[in-house]
Length: 297
Image (tube, rainbow, N blue to C red; front, side, top):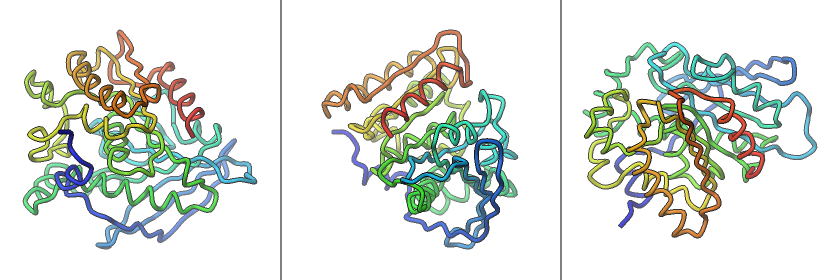
């Protein structure tokens, strides 16, 4: 029997959090508007965020994207990936999405950006010792960011998608798995069967943030991504990416595909593997993501 959303939340130690806006600054750029945001979590921890939106005022509410940033060992980047990009991306996604008509939000995850004063190892250990998980905290904060984004007056809460690359990809489909408010999920370069990664030793390429005790004893990445069904999902991988080796991707995809077949929604599952591609976004992936969201949001 496949894992339930409720049980997945228990394994993650998911928490319902609020995200309170404490400050903002608006900047007008060529073709888009940037908002530099400051939030606060219920425990008083400050969280930096960036929001990009179209320059033109719309008469109707717009579709929106929750963008989860990557890891890459660059703890200094965090949410600024949205407006500055990173080496694995073609360019900064925020301005590109704004020019396509989307309101896009990204926040610093724990240990990244302006929250990098606490290291990943220390944060992961502290969470586990308290019966929680760092990854569960990240997913919880993404859900809080989704709530804040959905409440924006220019956003249509019925048309919100989630996306990201690498760590951001994993956050995107885990969030979509547990939160029905994500109407479509597109993720790049971090979809593979974890048990296969462990067997081959490739799991050690992931950070400690992703340690979730008991996860593989009850479920798998393919099943978790399958919880997104029947909502649309785009999976992009490179066959030369050490985080998505073909064997591990094939196993995961068979399980996700089975969930979509059961939901009679196979047409909503889009798979884009690319030969000769490593851990990076490609022009084909960018085109696929934009086409995917245009079609489903």
